[in-house]
Image (cartoon, rainbow, N blue to C red; front, top):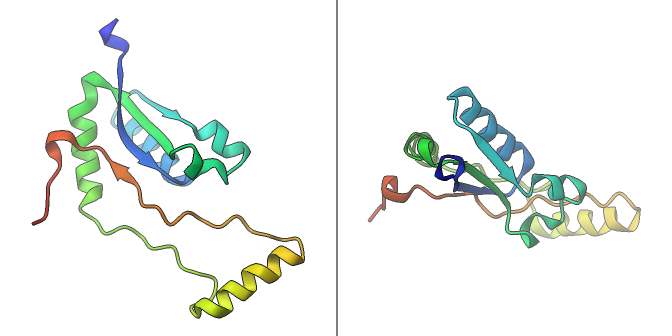
Length: 124
């Protein structure tokens, strides 16, 4: 049953990013499973507590998936901006939003992890 084995290639912390990776691998005919997306869709606050959303691919397509991810990893990660650039005013706006009942779920500031194996390039 080694033909149905899956290997983890990425850990992401947002549903849109997991969906993009799933679509990217589907476009290249790589069988993919996304673990944890169901739990995170029910309660997004659990994303960090669950260790992120795990993206896994079939072992036979591992090298191709890692090559695709290494191309993505070369690009700088997008930084999620605050509502207001001033940190004090931003904090006050978040506290105010909590008091009036529209507390938004803050996006995680944890970057994605790509498990590139031998394709990993260390900058040094």
